[in-house]
Length: 362
Image (cartoon, rainbow, N blue to C red; front, side, top):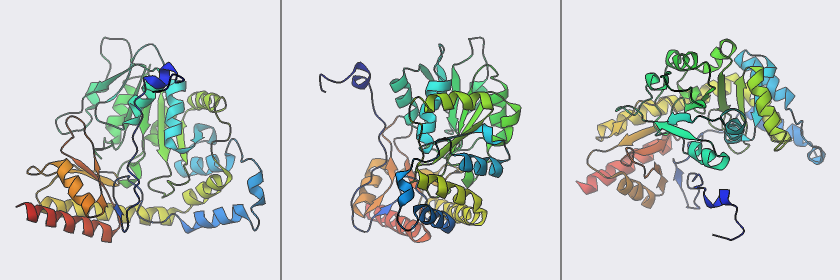
């Protein structure tokens, strides 16, 4: 700890991303990346933007990303002034904390959820209170409905939740939004395309609703960092004010071009998502045959535990076989593994490895 550090830095507990090791012939099922390539149209758009000599890269990108905003708005059936862009959904969420969640009363989010939320609270001095998931590790909408206390400074939850993969139906999301008219409700939909119904359809009816999505998962563009939010113009204006006080050019020229092409390629998007959903169903069935308990997932990962074997031990055994999964050392979920859905071959290799591990331990 350096004497030059600020008090803010001294008090931070940073987010720990999924491991990115250099292991030969690695099967990487720990960071929820899409196992399939992005749209060929996105790749072509990147090449077209580069041109023959890359001369356009000397020019700043459009600070407002107007073409991408219009494409997102058209895809989701909203007006372009309802769309905000950021460098991945993490940056979008960071601006949300400053612009919409920093109030006198605590914000609410689940006790088991995306671990960046408490990090942002520490970074931006946002008071928070966690709401326990129910015994099935699912969000109970009743826990977020108003009580006699002052309204919360905001409500934030992923849907599907991470790392559990559990989904709230849209009717339950609407109950939370409608029941908290004095608070902004932020729905983080990083994984919604793998089995959920987006709350974007509710935005026109609720001025307190903001929906955050990403191109990293279902559109296989994690390497380009494209995130966006959809909400009514008053919420979007708050985010734009923060963005333009922080970085006026969050998305580069290549990301903007690829994003437009990716969201317009409906066929590739639907086929990629369908392949992942099919693999998710298959690997869930196979793991259950091996004795695992698997939570119902609407994401591109599953959350599983084996009642007879320690999750940390299983994770270590898989790593020895060059297969990475995610293990969280956190109360209530320390016996679960989060397993990203890979290709069919990768999923088969995982199941075979687990069968071998369990057989050797019997």
